[in-house]
Image 1 (cartoon, protein in one colour):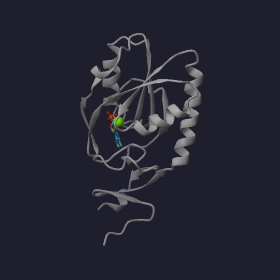
Image 2 (cartoon, rainbow, N blue to C red):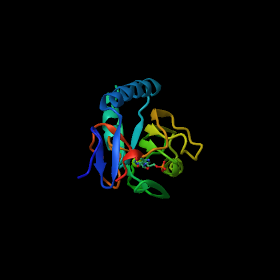
Image 3 (cartoon, protein in one colour):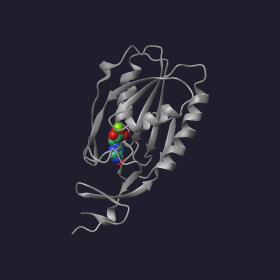
Amino acid sequence: MEIVKKGNIIIEDLEFRKYLSEEKIKHRIIRLAQKIDADFIGKKPLFITVLNGSFIFCSDLVRALNMDVEIEFLKVKSYEGLESSGEIKESINTLPNIEGRDLIIVEDIVDKGNTINHLHQALSKLNPASITVVSLLYKPAAYLFDINIDYVGFEIPNDFVVGYGLDYNGYGRSYRDLYVLDNENMH
Ligand code: IMP
Ligand code: MG
């Protein structure tokens, strides 16, 4: 029988341990929302949420804001298993006209930065007034690009995490807390 450490979760072949609690994440998102509210007074930003991973973060973030916002979703994929593939697939032609708009890209996590860099470039070509990036998680040690991540929930080490919208091979998104790969308990 498999022995799993208390509080740990197993997804496929990997064991993860609790890393950030739901409460801690909620509190941090409230602070981010207050900052965004203050910085965007008098503006009408268009939130562009990067699917799949950011759907939970986005829903908590926009409900913590004090302004009414427009939200669009873009499906972008670069990860296969535990590794960023570098090859990005997106669906930018599904967006409405963004010319002259203040865009806020909502990411669950910025890792190497391939996704955000690609998206930033593609959206810039459509002449928005501004592009701001908000990411719940950011791995500075992995990041390879210059684009500023304007609002960061948590800077984290270069470890693989799941839960709160983030997945491993499609699973683990619905855990309310965030979990990190527990290398001591490989299966
Ligand atoms: P990047 O393009 O390398 O920055 O990777 C960004 C995308 O890869 C994110 O939007 C996530 O979907 C996924 N990703 C990066 N790191 C992790 C992780 O630790 N766990 C789960 N997904 C991740
Ligand atoms: Mg993502």
